[in-house]
Length: 196
Image (tube, rainbow, N blue to C red; front, side, top):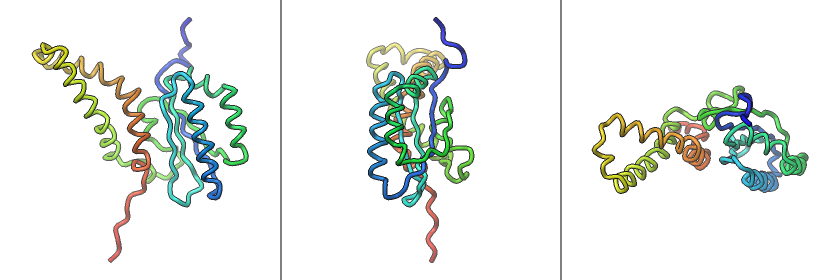
């Protein structure tokens, strides 16, 4: 049976803003991590992360990603998630939820967030390069070792094969991992110049 177009498709990133009282940070951190551990047991879970705008901010920006709408729906309607949300009901206030598909979900900030909270383009470029360089290097070395004749192909078919193999790897695994790993740096506010 085929999935309907409304629920089949690309990976889905869920962005949630929650308000947390400063004195409850250790408790909420444990609660969030327990939710990540639960989601990790569900098929299609691709990763998650959370950051605060500043050390004193009550706003926590949380992200999690699933392979498609079906797997996301399974997680969101699960008894595990409902019980987990119930445990956090008195600790956090959910103020905004957005769902996005494609690569933009890892970089965009909520639409009503200040423009300055979006990572600058150069940081986004660095993130992509940090993932693409090692993956491309490993692919090139492995293919050169396993299929020496690959290096003698014309440039067009060689690049075509390389991009066909590496684009899904980057989109589904490498970029979500890299952006989660360096998310605090991506969303860090720009440093203000020191006054003399």
